[in-house]
Amino acid sequence: MFVEKALGHSEKKLIKKEFKEIKNREDYLKKFLQQGCLGTLGVGMILYLLIPDYLYPILGTSVIICIITIGVYYEEINKLQQRRSNLNFLEKKNHVLSLRIKSERFYQLCEEEDEGGEYLFELNNNKLLFFGGQEYYPNNKFPNSDFEIVIGKGQSGETVIFKIFTFGNKIKPLRKVKSDDKSRLYHLANIVPDNFSEINGNLQTIESELNASQHDV
Image 1 (tube, rainbow, N blue to C red):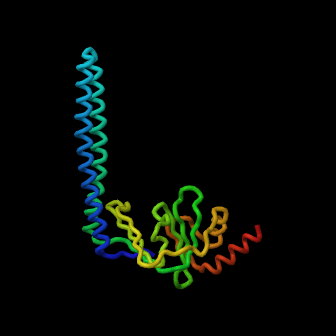
Image 2: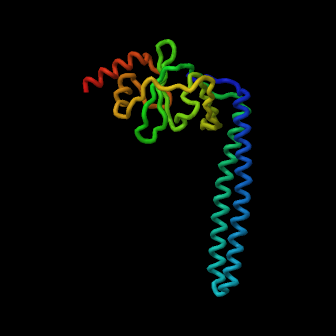
Image 3: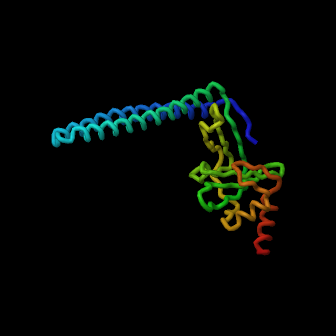
């Protein structure tokens, strides 16, 4: 289903953008730390001048706020450092997972709760591909007649980069499967509602069986 491929121009550009966002976030956090601690100490000094009898409560509160600010700073910095490490690992590994899909025939499954966008695409050789998730909500380019899903994995197998590249035209579903019909579709197409499932069959057969099952209800 997915194949490995070397980092191309688009993937390298995406990684470069991620590095830039990490740097911007680090700069923001440094300002947050400086302004947070200096601001807290400044307010503490003003309060002390106004109510000198409360030196120790004011001092204690200021110290606690600074400690919390420093803790938040280092927690976020550690996350960014881990992300940078994973991006460096991905660059060194020099490959990502790629799934290219060219098809104009698909069903879109209506969302019930918060499962995200879900689709059943008809492929060649009497195959169907089901996939879905929060990353697959429709937008002004997707679903598309020709698209590629690119996933880059980090050192522990976590997703570091994810991108849907579109090359064709925005397309509409042959059918929007209502939430009440989803369980029947899962059963008829032998779908396991996982992220990606490849199934034998075609949409014409599924359509006939789905319509027949609705009449039987």
